[in-house]
Amino acid sequence: MMAIWIVLPILTLLMFDLGLSLKFEDFGKVFRHPWPIFVALFGQLVLLPLIALGLAQAFNLAPVFFIGLILIACCPGGSSSNVFSKLAGGDVALSVTLTALSSVITLFTIPLIMSVATNLVGESVGISLPVGNLIKQNLVLMLLPVLLGIGFHYAWPEAARKTDKVLGKLAFPLLLILITVFYIQHHRTILDNIGVLGLCVTALILLAIGCSSLLSRLVRTDSRQRRTVIIEVGMQNAAQAIAIASSPFIFASEEMAIPAILYSLMMNVVLLIYVGIVRKR
Image 1 (cartoon, rainbow, N blue to C red):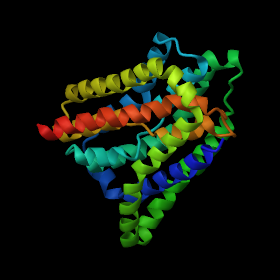
Image 2: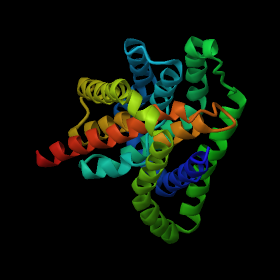
Image 3: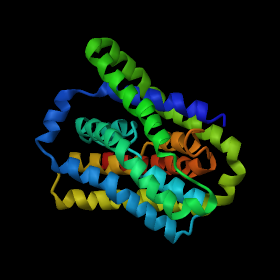
C-alpha cells in the first residue's frame, strides 16, 4: 500500500494549486456564455460514465477493472487540463472554471455513480463501497485544499502566483512518479491485462473527444471554447481515481487503480497529439 502515501499528497497539492489559480472574475466572464459550460459538464458528468459503462460491458472487464474504469470516468477534470488548454490556444479561464466546477459537483456525483457500479458487479465478488468514507475523503483531499488555495490567493496574491508557477510545473512529473511506482508494484497484472484495458481506456478517451467535439459544434461554440471543452472532457483527474481505489478507507484495492494508471498514460499521449495537430493548423 506504499502508493497511497504517494498519491494522497500529490492529489492535495494539485487541488491546492487549482485553488491558487481560481479568480472569481473568471466565473463572471464565463457564465455570460453558459453553453460551453453546459456541454463540458454534461460530457464529463453524464456522457463519460455512460460511455465507460458501455465499454466495460463490451470488453467484458473483470469486476475490479469494471469498477476502476467507471471510477476514472466519473472523476472531475484534471488540473493539467489548464496547461493543455493554454498550449492548444484554448480558453484558459473557461478551463480553470470547468475544473473547479467539476471538482465540486463530483463530490456528490461520484458516490452516486460508484454506488450503482458496485451494486452492478461488485457485490458478487465482495467489493463494497463505504459511501461515508468516500465523501469524507473527498471533502478533505478535494474541497479543503481548493478552499485553502483560494484563501491563499486572495490573502497573498504575489506569493500565490509564484507558488502556482512552481506547482504547475510539478504536476506532470509527480504523476509520472506515481505511475512508475504503480508499474513497479503491479507490472505483472498490468502486462497481463494491458491489451484489453489499453484498448478500452483508449476507446474511452477517443469517444470522449469525439462526442464533446460534436456537442460543441451543435451549440456553436467558438474554436477556443471547443478546444477547451474537448480537453476538459478528455482529461480526468487520475490522481483522485487512484486515491479512491487504493485508499484503505474506501476500496483498498491498488489493482482497481490500474485502469486509471493506463488512462493517465493514454490521456496524455492522445491529447498531446491533439494539441500538436491544433498548433500545426
